[in-house]
Length: 375
Image: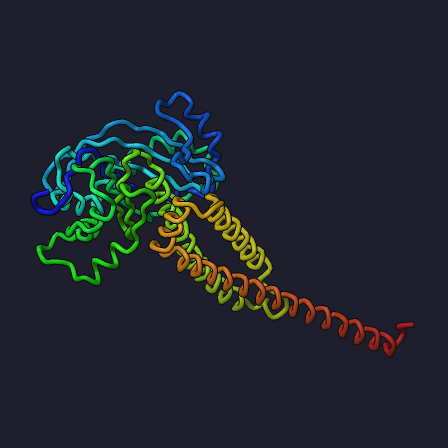
């Protein structure tokens, strides 16, 4: 620790690239489809306190083997293990595990981490890995769609540091904030910025630590348990789905407004409401979005207030999931209001048409009463 930076004896960098591929995946059928695939299993949490969290439908893990990836920014090729995780709400996470050479100081990892956080190389390779899997699993995916969005997250996962420093000592490491930000400038971070990055720090024992930032995390876990990275991956997948439905509702609202304007301009709209089919479509979309968002939010149950549950809640806050939920909820409300307005307009025109028919019948009766020879 000559430069004040701890030395890693065992650790890996976990790089996640998460995509949305549909509305729902039947994981039981997917597991049967991939029954001959080695390295296939259903995920579960294992750490003490894991009973405070429970997957409604445990994700399906599939090992994809070792890969060599060329990183242009640091001008080196890395060897990594690749795996895919399928969630029942049709998010798929591709994980690249990059080993940290024993004897590497945390400060020496900064250039590599800076590139891994945002490099398009991992996204491109992740999509290439997914294509053949999706071809095999197409029949198990309901409501497939191709949304270009992706969520990225990186966990610096350390099992052992030289000298076994305490969590407090590791948190005081001068370069830890810059490492999580991928900040390669030689200047020091402002104390306020460093404090903001490191304030979301949690420990269960004196020798473990989880520091959660919006795009990356540092996890020191001597037990080797992957529960905290798994929780961070899950929270990132929730963020992805909220972003997807936020975009979808924007598109749908714009489309609804255009259809309302187009339908209202037709000449026969004076006599008959053109909005019946549109109202049914709006209600169907509202129900689909509501059902999906509830399923995503309920796919991990927080049962108690134990350590893992606290870490999960911290990730939810750090990723600003409540703000995204509020945005989606606000747009759902707008869709519901549009439906109510369309239904009200349909009812009004139906009543107007009925009243006009009654008036015509009355006029007809009067005319017929005075019409010569009507009797």
